[in-house]
Length: 120
Image 1 (cartoon, rainbow, N blue to C red):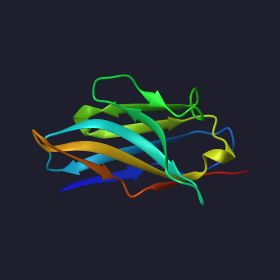
Image 2: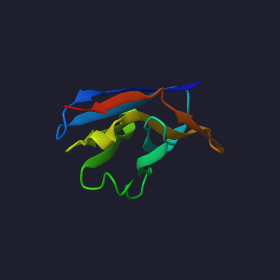
Image 3: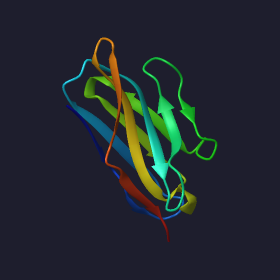
């Protein structure tokens, strides 16, 4: 069984920074794409940033130049560095990982979500 556990959310003032982390644990073969998503109240979940195992990163237009996604494969961890935060960034942030539980068996797993609130 695979579990994703997120941390790093909280309350921050506009212009501030936060760093989210998401670590995968359990029994698996490897991890492919990792990503961060968010869902604000009354809105659909949207992609924030993704990082493939060997390719270039991709960001939502709304966070380009402010957020940076990175990964540590040795620690099965994905990070999201968020700078210059705005009130519109307020949401529950979820990590997602494409996990190979076997050579040909890939499943998507989600974290439980961590609240990020940007407010003065």
